[in-house]
Image (cartoon, rainbow, N blue to C red; front, top):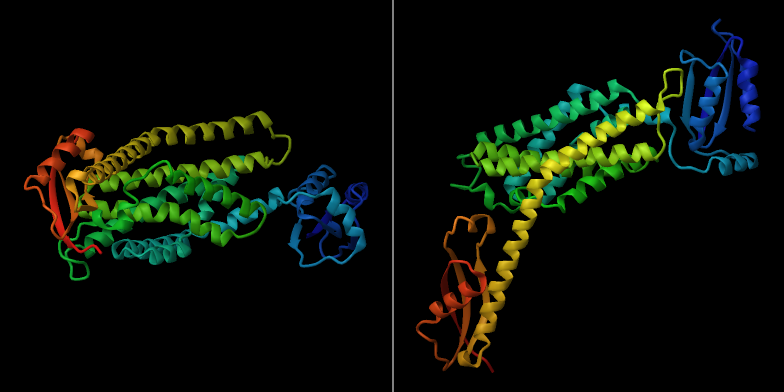
Length: 429
């Protein structure tokens, strides 16, 4: 529920009150004596979904933009008469004016934005190097990235170029700064006593997670954008949703920075691609949801519905085109991951099936370890496979077991392998 207070300009009192009477809205009017431009102050309660429609009608009745209109959130309205308004305005979204106000509130001042972004990147970079998911999530609470994403989408659907430009600029500059901070921090920490000697960041699980982006990565970004738009429209849960948006952007940006610091071009490229794809996906889902929710610019003499539609569609087309271009990388990584897992499963199944043969009675298959990677397979390198075999008492181990396994696995997968067999003494009762 909202409480709207409007200062009525001179000469428009009757037309403004006629609109409220026509809407069957209860109101209270107080004569204004403080300034000569206004003749009265009218206050009335209304459900949040009805604010935009009523204000539009009041503007048509002579309520100018230079007048004062205050929309206040109310804790409770006690009246049996308010029920009919709640039935008429049963929606859940806030008004266009409140949406703009919330978007501007979510986008902090430039200095505040930079400070929080740098701090969150520093914490996230430390979390990546420590392989600490909890630290990374803690950094996301600080990251101020939800505001710019929402601001850009709100500005686009409402035809506010200033708001849209500010949101886009904050996002692009912010993520570039996050990558730079990650690179500087990595360069300062590399080869110091704070990190293990000869650390290979590619082997850190939290880093590796951001360097092999697949199509599944899009679900986080798309879901975060939709959740962000819903939380703003319904004024609920923005802080928690902001964490989800930051998770999709800050850790891969910090990973790209670490890749630059360590000189691993592929790490920087893969993580940078994930940043851009997630950024586009968040903006796509938020922009689309705001537009489908019915938000449009103020319907004045300059309002052109066709122009607004063209502007939104143009930006949507640009975002989709960028995502499709970058999705080539995601598609390639997705296929590579699938083929790699398929080969690893086939190696496991073939080794297990061979040792289950009666010819190898007393030899029990325990497991297989391989670092096979389909991306490197195209270079026709030889891959080492380690198989652990349990040997029961009295069992005979063929002297060429490793060669036999090599022949069978290589023939089944078509991969040039080097098989190494380790044995465990086993007792079976």
